[in-house]
Image (cartoon, rainbow, N blue to C red; front, side):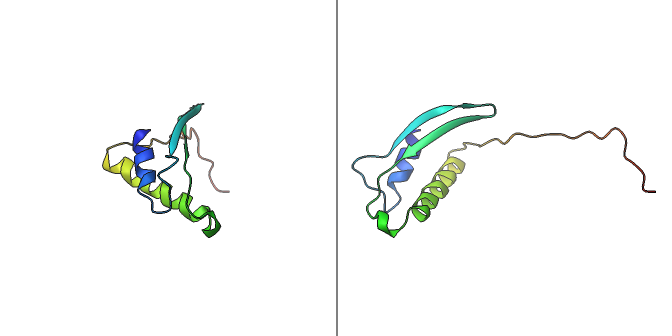
Length: 85
């Protein structure tokens, strides 16, 4: 979680004070749910674009540090395939 906070600080519009904070929000059936809160300098310039920049930067940092995000996999086994008439 510290990595997420450090990475968020590297995004230009994110304020250093108050510092970004992460929290453990819960456990899903296939997930660990984390949250990140950060203050930005200029909210009038839009929130979605800075949120995207933070998330992309976190994704890249996870990759650089060997942190994988696993996605659930479902295997489908077809016992019998109907023939076309």
